[in-house]
Image 1 (tube, rainbow, N blue to C red):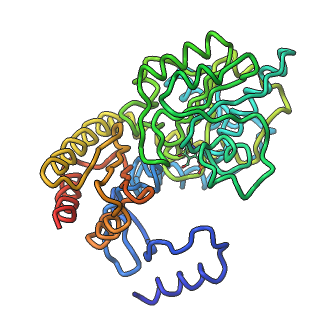
Image 2: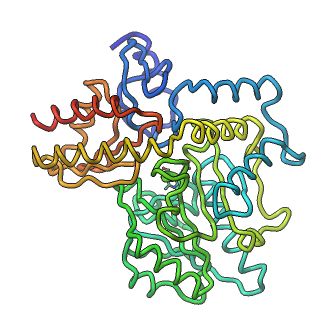
Length: 398
Ligand SMILES: Cc1ncc(COP(=O)(O)O)c(C=O)c1O
């Protein structure tokens, strides 16, 4: 281990709150495209992209120019004033989606928090308050108190009781369970289209269509959490476009500003009417720096046709992974959409496989004991993907 890494690890172990335990023993000094370079100068292909964040790759020239250009002008001012980039970004997101209005914040959890508040406020303002939010078992919606409560995994919420009231969890992809849960006190159904944090589990198209109908019938708002699936990752700007429905509210974050912290809540005019001046806000949300970064990311996605690339390279990866599955039997299932892919291994060796990938210079992540997740920058080429496939194939043939 080199001295610089040793020192960084010492600082972390001494001073940082221990919420990450033993991290992967590496620290990066810089990156370029799909590669990250460590303190010992070793190069790694980044197939995780900061967990679906670095959509335009590392040190992307357009993004760097936008951020540095904005920093030279001004980084921040209060939302008490009109902010050009914030308004332009809201317009861009509206023009590219179902939405009529946008609220900007700083993370996925905050975007979901805004959506939950909006759903409750919407019915409160109508004079007919509704409390219940229905979400799915195995979902993940963030780390704030409301979003850990919405998250359908007790391990994230148990130590933090008492939790906010009114959250109900139902099995994912099970329309009967959803029908049994939604009633006249339900203000919203909150779902991911691919459950990212529990092993890349895509929703069924028929299920999502039926949930949409159910929400329309009962008046409940449909909130889609596209924090992980949004911003081109699945081959379209948002995954809902591939499900033939539109939500009332959508949240996104991760990839939106290519690594600069940001979150966004998109809503129809009707749903957005639930918020009045003073109901919600954020110091940093949609500040000039984050907005400039997000505008540059959206432009880069368009100019370089990165959504198309996500579909083409994603399909290629899944095809090749299924070939490994057939040949070696070491893979039980390959799941995903575009460049959000889960590789379910036939035995609980995901941590070992992740470590072997790392040794060979490939960054992937393991979920639980048997799933490997990849969510690389959308700029990844077929040639780069092929290099990973050949390394993984070797590892799984051992
Ligand atoms: C689907 C989903 N929602 C919400 C979040 C929370 O986002 P953040 O960590 O930016 O608060 C995540 C993060 O992994 C996520 O995957």
